[in-house]
Length: 366
Image (cartoon, rainbow, N blue to C red; front, side, top):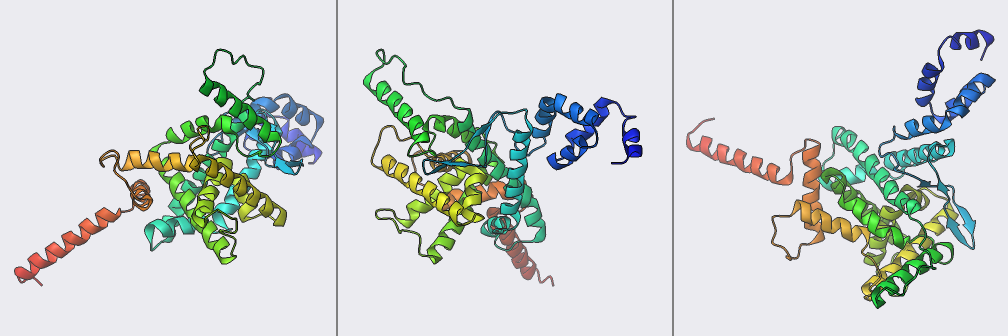
């Protein structure tokens, strides 16, 4: 920047400069800091407040520490560090997620097209344009669910268990073992965070809940189509293709864009990592199906149950409902939200037109 430009900028008070900086991306902020020592010091002195304000501009602002998407390989596993709020590294991670979500949503594959095609049959440019922000928001919710595990403290082994009954003691041991597994054989489960992640899903607004179910279902369908063509599904002994699709959807809900990027857009090593995460999820699913009392409910299971309870609450309790009916009813929630007629409304309109045509024919009106 020229000396003249510097002097022109110096006429503004620090508050105005900081207000401008808040609207910049990190690359622009770095360039601003290079203009002069005064600007560099101004930004560094206000880094915490700047980063807090900058984080609020994202679709689903983080509620605390978040995971780092730049994973480190230790003991054969990719593990993610934890980033505290109030630092430019925190904003760098959010910018990375935003770019990846934009790529996943818009280009590779065309997720918005798949989502709208599933629910609307014949799609239009207008429908897809309305769905884009909803799909992006959904992927941000997946990242928020993932970040809950970054805020769960390890379970200490030195807790006095003498006052616990047998089941409570077993549960405590299970949590301790799980936290150890984070650093050893299974760094992707985060069992201690599961009840909080389930609570997050259950607390979502109707539209967010509906989109979360639909996007996860479409992602699972796309995963099945891609891997079935490559003969990868069902490759594991004892694991049916349907189970692996369920685990894929569960892993997407639990690890968000970090996992989806590896699976959908990553290089060969990233794809191997994603496959390994699915294998870990299959092990957990087997534990649950075998009746392990400490295997918690999955997020996909919670999602289906919550959508059924909210959107099909007119059905008698205990009645068995096929997943497809839950998904179709959930689509009606989205259609109403974006101003599109639901399937029932289309049928009702068709019947009304037919009735009017019959009446006009009887009256010989042409």
